[in-house]
Length: 111
Image (cartoon, rainbow, N blue to C red; front, side):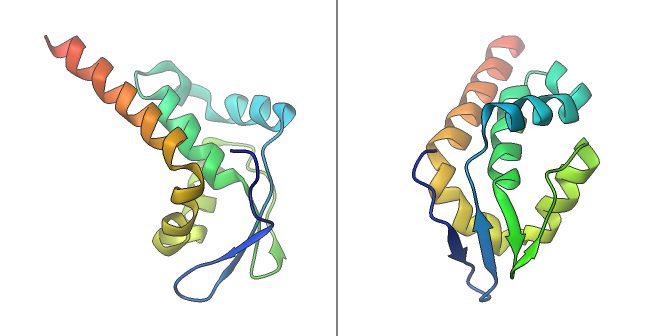
């Protein structure tokens, strides 16, 4: 995740300001995740949330670091599909890798 650009633009022309999540932010994010950290998809959820929470402003309007799972979801909704589409290439290996691991765990649990 190192080397994030300071700002990216979505297909709709919205500007997302980014910063790398630091270890303290990650601990806050884990705390905010609450029950999401108990399931097989915890790693995938945390990776996706980390991608979403790297956004610090939308069109120059600052957004706060989410303090709860509901706030992470709300920020994801504000970023929208076009925002996630431009974020995903920056985080793709991390997000896809954790999602693949979660699917692998689910498949082995079914067998």
